[in-house]
Length: 358
Image (cartoon, rainbow, N blue to C red; front, side):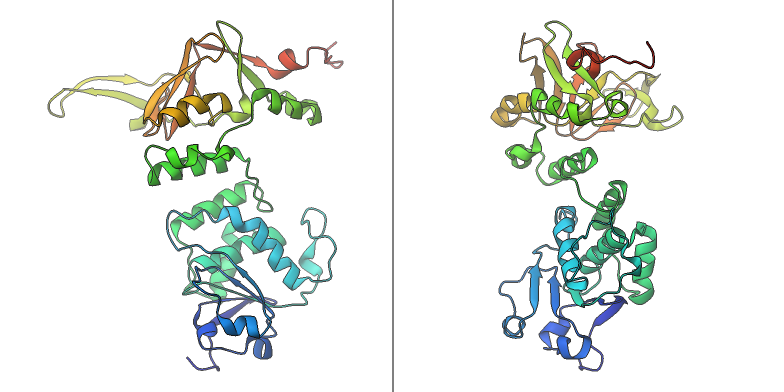
């Protein structure tokens, strides 16, 4: 490839995206494009020596272009790296505090992967969303206008959609949807869930630790939170903040019906509509579940109350179906008929007085 037409595309200001080819060809990025920083979204066996020799500021995110990769985990650090390159003199980078739309960029960065089609465009899109408040749709359109061949794979698009749901500014590792996404992905790679279950970060904190955060919440936030207790011994089991919410399917859909077929053949014996009320609270893995989940490493099993040993729920890594008809994968649940649910204020904050209603 000639130096006249290196495979890199200017997207906005000093943001360039492209393939590995300009690095292979030793394109003088500093001289031609004023590029002083390089973000490599690729697995290097060895960082190219000439990049080090030319004193570029380098960052490497070693991922593959696959349906398994978790790119969300890197967005906070890559966005900050790009910030430091484009706006080196800024003291405050928080997009909630500073509007960068009218602040000129003072640096340039080359963001590349192998072909400049999926991985590096994903990180450019995430930055445009974070720094300039663009929606995913607008950021993707802005990128493809300049580099039509750019197209993040379906897995990366799914994660960008989740990033947008989080607000498009920061990735919260404790976000419920993000944690559920990681659980679901882990089951695809490992049907037993053994890998992710051995990571302490997988589990929600003990309920007493979580409740310490309640004092920092507003009344409006507290009104949305409930606590689940064992119906028999009143052992506190979970806060509603650990629930995995699911949308009941419509009655018209196939998921909204329970169909029983003959043991041999496809003949339908019975059809029942799903129930209006859910019989399960689907939850994140909780700390008190560790012994069952880590110790046995079974595809499915039961949960017993840590207080009175009554059966209160179960799990199935292949997924299970709620009484409303919705499939949840993986399925970690408490049975609604075995537990009670109360407003968190009534359990942990009994002295709180609602002066507006008194």
